[in-house]
Image (cartoon, rainbow, N blue to C red):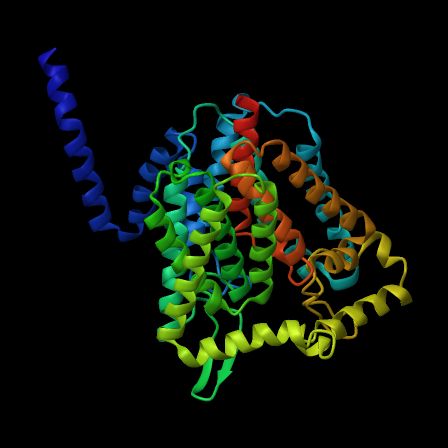
Amino acid sequence: MLLALTRRSFAAPLSLGACAAAVSLAPPLAVPLLAAPLGWWILREPARWLNLFLAAALLLPPLPFAWGDSGPHPGLLFAALGVLAGAIRIGQFRVRPGLLPAAFILFVSTLWLSIPSAALYSGPGLALASAARVLLFSISVYVFFWTAYGPPDQAFLPLRRLLALAVGSALLASIDFFYQLPAPAGYGAQFVWLDSGVFRRAQGVFYEASTLGNVCAFFLVMIAVAFLQGPKTVGLSRFVLGLGATVLAAALIFSYSRASLGNLAIALLVLGWMNRRRLRLARAAWGMMIALASSAAAAYLLFPAFSQIYWQRLLGSFVYFFEYTEGILSGRLQTWSALLDFLARNPAHALLGIGYKTLPYTDYLPRPLIADNMYLSLLVETGVIGLAALLLLNWAILRTAWRARASFCGTWIFCFWCGQIFQMFSGDLLTYWRVLPVYFWVLARAVREADAS
């Protein structure tokens, strides 16, 4: 027995010493020697990969390598570990038949069915890129199924920590905008022209500013629901929630995204309608108004020239919308007209499409186009079937979230997705593969809580 205890006591230091010697003799061995125990630690608990993936998606920028549009992202490593975890625990999944799981599967299937069209009209290179984008979207669907129907008794990330990650990301974006720090790999070239110079819109660790605005709107809706239902629902005080809302709202302003602001406005209106008979509504409204006013004041103090042009642009969007529609929509009408004209001249493409996410790159059209409209983009790229699958998915999400509205997550995702459906008219939101998993994770939490009740 003494010999066995002696062997055990020396096993750890001897292993550590052997690893250190191996790394010193052959430095390339450091990667597998470090990755193996990290992967083992992550796979030991069901939700570790998912918690790390969500944290990486919100806080980490893409790596500065020439791969894809914006470089590989560290979150992909955790997603790969999640697939491995799912294969190991496949017997613990309990998928319940229903409209929402079927809608997810149908929508992903329509995206895959468009890959042959991408190869036919745009070549094998773009077909492979299209398949890669379908895989990226599929991560979000996998997160939903894992969270809603995966292994039981998972230690999910607490909502207050998720909010802290989002606020941290928004704070980084605001600092990035104020100091115009070097942009991450493959950033979207989006700028604001002022008398004092040209400034890159706030995007933080994301590919483009609209993604940042969308994320800020999502978590501002969360804070509004928490104000209404009571801070105990997320384990934070009203003061802390107000500070978080101030940071998120400032980042939303610096992103210069009007569509995200419209998303937030619609979500708050829906939340107010859902709780129109509750006495706390006035107090919650005052809390959000104070937080938004504080963020507007902070933005003005930090960058008065930008704040002035931002509010002028926002006001002008309402006052002159019908008079200068094309300019207010940033040239989208011309693009939409070109796509509709293409479908009118080639009605067969309205049935099967030309391949998912090929519009910005293909030579099949007279020129590559960015639709900036999720519905029209899917109609051209995946046909009527793809558009119908998206409409069904939106309906299924709203229907499921409405039935789970008694829960915090149910109310949160229902209100936000109402705004998201509106914002899809001005952006290809389903390409935001890094933040969609966060949204579908909240949706899945609502499903799981509803099934448990």
